[in-house]
Length: 489
Image (cartoon, rainbow, N blue to C red; front, side, top):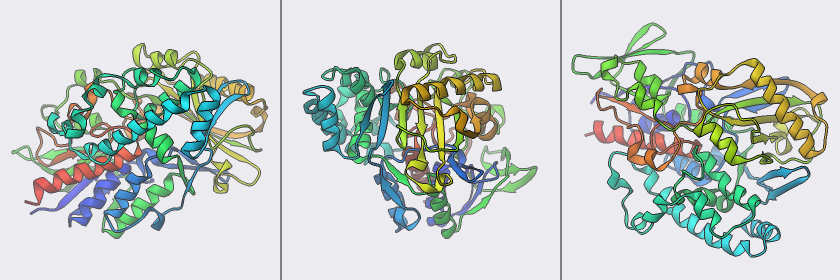
């Protein structure tokens, strides 16, 4: 058996797969086009400040525990976790916010104070969400997306109606408070779709939120990357940075035989790409691509983002580690992302102030902040537009939290559509992959195994199970399991 595998990209899914492949005895080499590892989860350092460039939320800790346990390890062998309490804060108007505590009983009290009687409905809703979580995350999402029958289990069969209803309908059946509705609909944004397009079965994300809680790895999400890299190296994985894969070569039988990296042809038996799926297929001759440009153009993508990494020379008041600004209409903003793609007039936005929790993110007495505006992928991206939107959100932050911050900015760095394309070859500059709507779920997503090229596989957010960090870890395991099934016989 030939056991040499080349992995393209070093994000969560690639690192996950690399560990499983190395453990099985494969000779694994990862090629990363950028100068640091981690894919979208890289790190930005400036003037004593630290920023996670990509993911900032640590949800579903059980998925991380399961990953490390497969190698006889624990997350605590590599990084330190703390549960955030409060978990996050949501602003609706000036000096009008709801803070979500770190435990469920206190969350019920918050709901009851906002809408008498709502805690009863919340308990029932979260019980259903936990049941769905146990079905989905502990079983269904670990399936390879080959057959529609993967979704058919005794547990999912009795919940078939939830696949044809939506989160939006489910949430609004009993809860009437607009604020509470927005809080309950917020978690599905991690799936990259509107609540009105997301199957009700996906309420398991609400259990991830209220049941399992929001966590913080000390030093940031990049510490998770460093932990996975350390594990991979212990298992014998080799890493090459500044390594641009320019072509995937195949032989006369349409079987992978080498990759061209920085102009050099490197023999390999297998290729697994954790890079953008559409981009990876452009590394093949056109006749060997599974999906046409029309196919990709017709997919519903999760948003792109406009991000700002900002260093402040003082501590920011009246905010939490994770703070959401929902003082404008989500429905209108969502239309600007999914229906008629354009820059939103009144965007919702998210801010992370990790230095509130973790002193390592900023010098003493100062604050590190990341701001994020979800955007339609593929829209125009210029410095002038970025500046306009920075002004919009900073002025809203000042108004909603009753403080002046503009004069306290030491520096800022922006990141948007063009950067996602440049750094990650991301299709239309999307940030999160394909939206998890019913018609793009499981077997309806792009396949892990190429139908046209032997020994070519894919992993990551454009294939199963979908967007997000925990799904990326799972995707790496699914891809490696499929490879081992096909090549260890």
